[in-house]
Image (cartoon, rainbow, N blue to C red; front, side, top):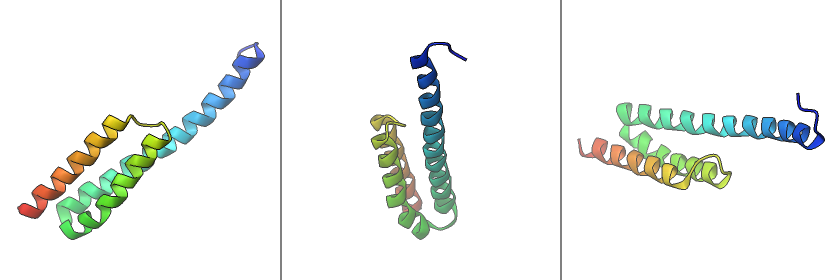
Amino acid sequence: MPNIKSAMKRVKTSKKENTRNRGIRSTVKTILKKFNAAVENDVEQAAAVLPTVNATLDKAVAKGVMHKNAANRQKANAAKKLDAATKA
């Protein structure tokens, strides 16, 4: 544990931020898993989940948990996967 007051505060805030960021990352992973499962089983359901995937990724970017290029890459990959599944 640090002795300097500002360092003590940083420990507290970084712990809070870490907890928040982990929750957001977990939500992103969960929604991507749901989307991937929906693509394999039911394409119509996957099409319904895609806007939720995009919104969740955008929220993660807005909160600073994820870089915008990483989120855009994941959104593009999800759209490609859905497009390939609808054509197949």
